[in-house]
Structures are given as structure tokens and as C-alpha cells.
Image (cartoon, rainbow, N blue to C red; front, side, top):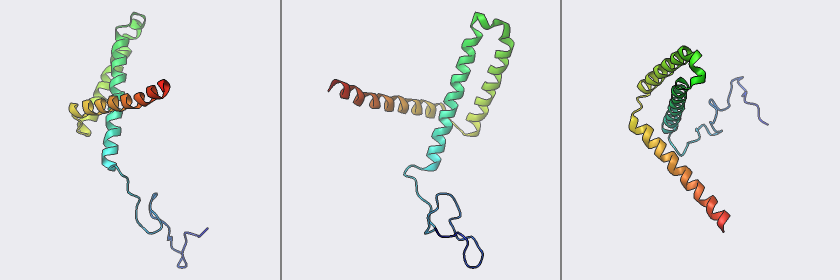
Length: 119
């Protein structure tokens, strides 16, 4: 294996992870920005699920003794959701489109399994 330190004592290996020997970065087929935005929307969906869970807990009779704590958590997560959507400039349409794409993808993945079981 070749040493990344050259004759002049300087590092001659790739500067960044993913950079190949010839000095060019590997290119992703999907844009990195789109990928990161999709992950941000997925994270927002998770926050919304947590908010919905807290709302359900507020209505649960067994949890009435900790109601103030749940209300505080609910307010905090709603604040995070608001700041997150503002910071990443996420619109409601994007959330719905992402959710529709996920549902469509999961439906398409289920169909081949059913056909394999039948056939």
C-alpha cells in the first residue's frame, strides 16, 4: 500500500472522503441538496408524529396527573416544528408530496411480494 506522504513530506492523498485518486469527487445520481431536503422533511414528519402522540397523551385519563408536563413538552415540540419549517423553508405542499411519494413507493413495493406469493 502506498503512503499518502510524498517525497517532499507533504500529504498527497485525497483531500476529502469520497475523493478518488485522480482528484475528482464521486458524483451522486441524486442531488445532495435534494437528498438532504428529503431527510429534513422526514425529520419534520417524525416531529409531527411526536406532537400527535403528546396530544393523544393529553386526552388519556391515566396521564392526567402529569398533564402540565405533557403540555410543556407539546409547546416545546411545536416551537421546534415552527422554527424547523421556517429555517428550512418547508412548505405544507412539500410535506404532502413527500408523504404521497412514500405511500406510493410502499404500495409499489408491496405488490411484487403479493404476486410472488400467489405465483
